[in-house]
Length: 620
Image 1 (spheres, rainbow, N blue to C red):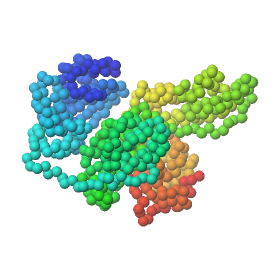
Image 2 (cartoon, rainbow, N blue to C red):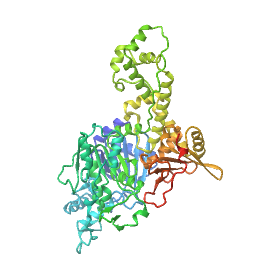
Image 3 (cartoon, rainbow, N blue to C red):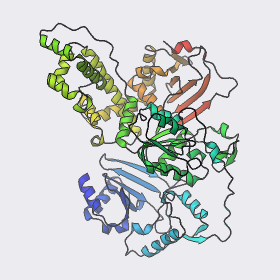
Image 4 (cartoon, helix red, strand yellow):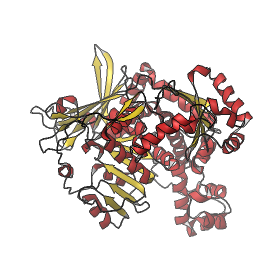
């Protein structure tokens, strides 16, 4: 069965719980499926060695060649059964992922069970009655809040009910919920005199050039809005304290900046994140405050956070905890941009373009070579007459590392009219410019793509058909086929686990750039260098550092990078002012790739901040 046949059969399914992107159906209702689809689901389960005892509900995707085998062991005995295991199968890529929830404190749960079976099933009426009870109690008024067990239980208690043998009963006594402390949320809105950190990242990556509409979810006093409006940008905002009457507007980019960390109610926190995602058309920016345990212990504990000295609530996250919160809530990949700042793309083509641009270096055209004598006087005159056009064409070739397609060079039609084709134009300009520069630019572009594809293994990567057209051209020009590109990229990614390869690459790098090689018992231990030399790293070391930065984000406040040869660690060092003769350490970040953790060490308030005495080792 291919993707087209699968999608056609799924469209014929009339039973089951139907969502915009998928249909859910219990195995006891498979008689409502087209027979070929029923047989195919069984074949997939058998091929993956998932026994019938380990799944009872299937999720059929409407637009993708995918399905999931879900296991709810208490489907018939529990009013709101919890998910124990999910096997998600990507049939287009021939890959599958098994996720276990049986040891999770807060697993996904099911509601409206009558939709998963057929009306003639003996339990259909009792399932309908359970749903009617929940609707009467007002539990389904906000469906975004009911998908997880803990949220569902808190919602039941808030409405004054208890679950007894799977049915809802009014609490026999007055509802004695935890005393709610009066939190001054409005005090969390700081007065800013420059763009906030999340907005700065948007500016850095070219998202604030007027091409996208922007909505600030929880805009506080509106300082970001005022500055962006002054630049003529299409930006709106809403805030529960300062702009409660403003409309929540769907926009290309939505920023929910330092909002989730000041909401003391877990359900409301989820609602805020989900609400901002619903408004997002292309990109959601999520940020929250980070802190370590030693910092948090100075405050009064409250719920899952603390009460600050200003009587505001703060839920301080770790980098990994914030990423997990975003991905679990939205079921989307969260890309670390900086400490406490993540991007979540709804537009997957924009995500691919963004990830590529992060790994791309730009070849700098160094000089014009002297024109070589040629016999074609007409060619000389042609070049002289249209020199700006040919110069722009040559720069475009260097940027791409190959000949541009029609949509990649602005004056493509004019070039064709004058010369006939890009190939002829390249032969002509090669007489004036150095062809070796194009070869070097092509080699750099191929390396950049290898690094991109290697690091893309950490994300939900798309198949060849879903790649942007420009990337397809790159794949064909530099690798021939997509499989060749992925194979080489995976080999490169796996090689970062070889300590000897990392050590050899760093020792070679030390011969090329300023840096400090540290020894431990006479054995090379690590290499420290300034971040400005990142582009000169080999592809192996670029992937090594890139893999670590998947957990951390951008290096805006970092100066020095320390690669550990044998422990799979990367240390980042940020100083108060690196232009000083002896800068003082402001922060140290240790990234442990094997443990997928990030440790932050803040020296700003330290009485004895370590100075950098050997700064001369790190500069040219």
